Length: 253
View 1: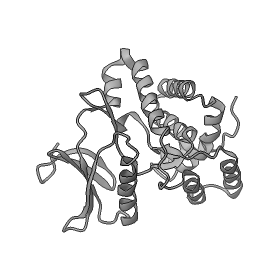
View 2 (view 1 turned 90 degrees about the vertical axis):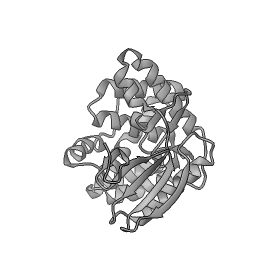
View 3 (view 1 turned 120 degrees about the vertical axis):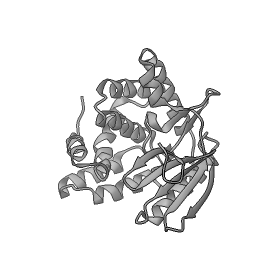
């Protein structure tokens, strides 16, 4: 699909559109989009680039004559891992292994200047639609969780992984990147599968992640109420209702 200027629309979001223009990708934000959030996303991408991880090269950040901010980056050739999973059901287990390997390669890296995941979660819990007792319980849980400072994506799912013709993988969309605990990043990915109704995929993902990372399943599960509470700030009413069920689950078998 092309936009009014002949560019190919890659994705449409409520407050932004992502288009391809030759060998460049433009992420164009609505006029009322937070300038601070735009610049923070660009800064995240610049900082992650310096880690050596394979991500799209940041080319420029500019403002259109209409007052819209634009992040311009290099186009990553290839199809998404989500598309590969859908087109090759017989290879699903192999592709899930690849997905987790890509995530763990990312999690091994440190990007010290990124925002703290822990501090971001504390702010999000304060902003989430929670009663005071639940908010207190979640704050207490955050303080008890492992203090790690690894590169975390914040929205790691198969649509954000591009598989190139050379066999390499490019990770896109760094708006939610932080430094923190990979177990929390895994908890978010698990919930993202669940939100899509992909129950079997969610369980296979968590099984694979825990086996490869050596992070106990119980540790990832302890992050789930925290991550679910933070995730309630996004999405629609149905998603929030689903997530609130996870917020209120504090013990797992």
